[in-house]
Amino acid sequence: MVYFARIVEETDDAEVVSRVFAFILHLGVLLYIRDLITKTRNYYDERTCSLSDYSVLVKNLPCKKGTRAKMALVLTECLGKLYKMHEFTFLPEYEDFYRMEEEINEVINRIKKAMNEQESEENSLLL
Image (cartoon, rainbow, N blue to C red; front, side, top):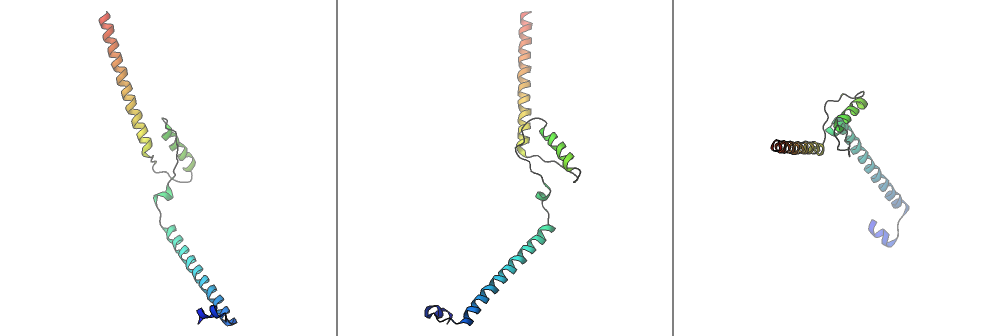
């Protein structure tokens, strides 16, 4: 009957009022459900914690020697007044940099040692 009312265009005032009331009722129920879901999500989100709740992520630090120590010192001085710092973890890219730097220094030291040995052999042959 409701579908045919559009075709025939015989809608009375009571039907229009009932349609508007049904729309408002559905809208109110949907808003209430959304509010209930949002409140429930916030309730459980406040009672659970993850590592990201207590983490500070700093990107694009320069790969220079002493950067980690300076950053730890700055974080301790700035945030240490508010929070007790237990551990500083740096991403693997800095570990790779420091490992490569140590390997490069070892290679440089070996080259210098080999050059010094060669020079000492040449000096001993000249004498």
